Image 1 (cartoon, protein in one colour):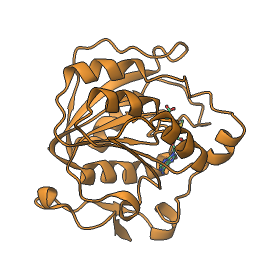
Image 2: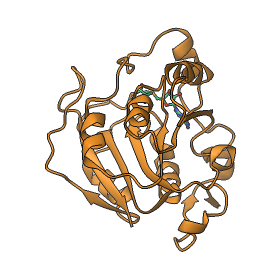
Image 3: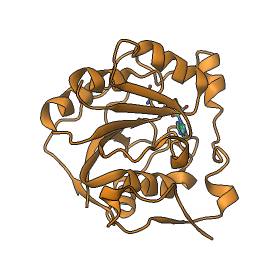
Image 4: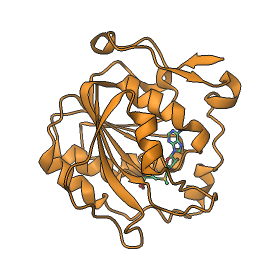
Length: 230
Ligand SMILES: C[S@@+](CC[C@H](N)C(=O)[O-])C[C@H]1O[C@@H](n2cnc3c(N)ncnc32)[C@H](O)[C@@H]1O
């Protein structure tokens, strides 16, 4: 049965249509989703090959090239490297990291302890009532969260970011669109065609003429996608 994600829309997004997901309540989102990975165990075992100990190389590009109007949200923020870079560059903006693994949250809080504008919340990104406080959100930075969730949760992801962003707000990120995951994610690939299909009802997908830079070993597998909320 269709299920409405989260709580009533914030005042500034009240004009936007409700976003519904065509899935069963128990199968799809709560409690803590049908997440196929025990992320907490991965952090506990220091089995975190995605963690490069620094922000994604494209964060500095977007810090220099995009205006942010509202809070910045980083879903699946891990140990908080990207979060830290955004927060340092935008001390006047609230920067919110969400992660469901307690060890990641602990590390991210330590990592960003000196930054007054950072809040890191242990929560399921899709469970908006757990963490969303109706702030105006101007930017969502995506880096290895979309590829980390099972593909069955992609509808939930699109619905959640659509509900969070005010009109004109941006979802920017590095997305794995050109990787052979062999059906064995995470990370799970999402081809560009699928990205367009999923996001275009609510977003204008922009393809800036930027060279995508990434970490060694991931070249050619991911690309920058910039999406503006309609
Ligand atoms: C591959 S890791 C990437 C972490 C971080 N973005 C980085 O690059 O270091 C994926 C992260 O997403 C988190 N995660 C997965 N599903 C989530 C969800 N539904 N809500 C919040 N965090 C989630 C995991 O705990 C994990 O920290």
